[in-house]
Figure 1 (cartoon, rainbow, N blue to C red):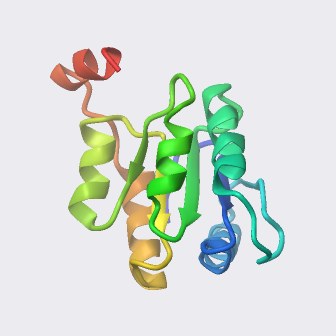
Figure 2: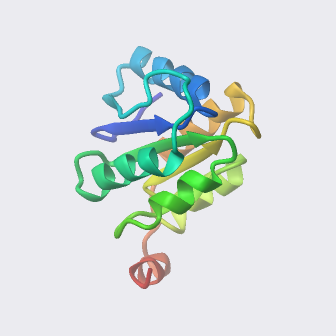
Length: 145
C-alpha cells in the first residue's frame, strides 16, 4: 500500500480489539508508521476513553490519520467528533469511505467489527489512506463544521 501519510494512530474497544490487531499487523508489515493507543488486551473497556485518545492525537497533529474500531463504529465516531478539528466518519463500503475523504476531509475512519469482515475492513483502510481531499467547494463546507 502506498501511503504518503506521516503517522497513523489506531485504537479500539473490546469489541474491535481483534480487528484492530489485524489492521495493525498489516500496516506494520507494510512499514507504515503506526501508534497503537490501546487497548492491549480484549478485556471490556469504555470506547469513549479510546476514541478521545485518538481524537486528541489527530487534533494536535501528532498523527495525521486515526483508525477507530468498535462493534458498529458509531460510538467511536460520536465520541471522537466531540473534539475540535476532528471529522470521524463511520465507513461501511468503498463509496462511503472515498466520499468521507474527498468531500468531508475525514481524518479518522471508524469501523464496525461486528458489521464488516476483515478483508473488507482492509479494503476500506486502503481507500481511506490513499484518497485525497478535493478541496474547492468542499473546503468552504468543511470550514463551517
